[in-house]
Image (cartoon, rainbow, N blue to C red; front, side):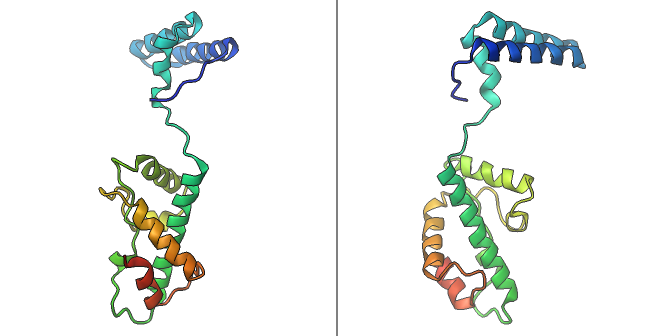
Length: 169
């Protein structure tokens, strides 16, 4: 549930008017009644009732987490591109370098951000070749991988030996 802050009277009036307009555009009596109910709740100022309107709004992802996800996807872009450039792949399979996702139960905000990045056509080649939900917490694994990548100079052209150093625990 969204952490609803107090709305000003002006904000409540603007939202109430928006819901009245939506009621005029509604395609069914149910939708019309639904939008008019929200409008009335906002105008009446019954926060306990109107806060349900905001249940569909997710909390903002903090900048540190967003940067972490972008770094993980950048690393996987480097791993995938490097893997594809290797002339011989002695010890590696493509599955070894694909993005494994984030755990939907424990890292859902990170997983949803990955999904949003894909929807925005960012890192799509990495995300679509990998998994979205790892079904297992991956943050600590990715932190170790990022630390090793940084140690190697955050190169985007990696040898098989360097790739193995990054992906091995």
